[in-house]
Image 1 (tube, one colour):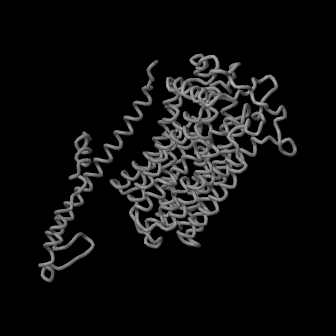
Image 2 (cartoon, chains in turn red, cyan):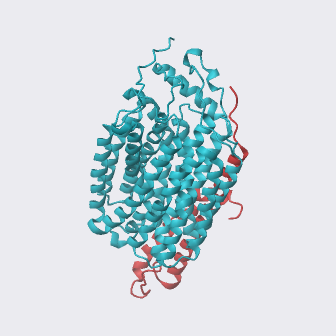
Image 3 (tube, chains in turn blue, red):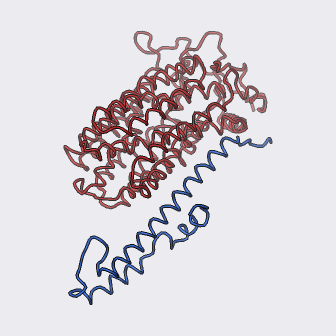
Length: 93
Length: 454
């Protein structure tokens, strides 16, 4: 049985597409992680939950803790195995 | 194993009035089935806006829709070679009946979705299986009906598909606005599924089923042989082994994939891009219709030109046009600009997809081609999946549609480069494949394929 010849063009293009997925995937993971961090910082500094809902620290002080807890518990894509893999594999992120 | 007796084929190759060969009835049937079965994928861009806006009743994210579309194309891609094999094993007619039932049920269920996972199952899985069936075993079936002028048959089939998709995109856009999501998909599912099932009554797998010869058969052509099932299976296996050893086996699905990745991005995001520019959904839906409409000429012409002058030239030209016309979208802001883009892009888009069946005959002769074509469709659908997934990621990180247009152009132009590395099509790449068969499994006289120079 003769071997199946995989043309070099085929291999190069498939590798290129894989590299694009890794690059943009790692970028997306970084963006996701940055947004989560920014959201958490904004919550702590301004006493807000996210950017959509503004609550005053005085009137909702007791209610803020659960929101903070939920924010810190929420894992970003960077905390997942596939997110870590993309970041590790991509030399640019 | 003894060779079975040759069937009693009619020496008159026509059974219809005015000498119309039944092959043209098959072309008409397959055209309608293709329009019904695959148009939902071609018109996917129309459903993005209703699913992502609160007005549409869903309000899901673009990422969710993009993921579902990616699943749609991935499932279609994985199932494409399988459906080709199923077509070889159980016949295209049985696949048509199964596809008709599956289409109707899928559309009825799609009409009542409320959660994203419902959309993943009905659209991403069930309708993608329908698309595979309508695009692989049924499209490959035409190969058996034409000894000559295959390009004309394939061109008519693809051309009709272009008209149908144009109508379907407009129809879906109109119906969603007029009767809502449920009414749209229930009506299309019931009507479409019923038509496919009704057409299966008139469909036959091969000319010998009607005791006639393929279109273009000459008196000096070798007589068709009906072999025992085991011998036919052996021929398919040996043929595919020889095909897999050629570079074209790898490069043709890759080219089809790159071409589909190039236009897949446009088919999904040209409508949202237009809507972002302030154009209404119904008006923007016409972009897809115009793309399909203007693709009709090149869908029809590309296989005929490929048969006459060789597949490489027309494939290069089509992919180049597809890539270069995307530049228009960077400046498009008015309706007329989008419509001009659609007209120009459609010409390249149509020529990209329709010549493969003819190219297959030029490279691989008249062997059982359904499985090979299945792999090419797998490449095409993987291209759509890659385009959808990558485009979603790029939009997420850049927040702009501009980079995905660059990506679309890059896919098309890399496809042009890969086409230039293909073997010339003057000669069949596997002329001696039947020598690997036992004598009783061989064709009595080797048949020439449709060859042309590049």
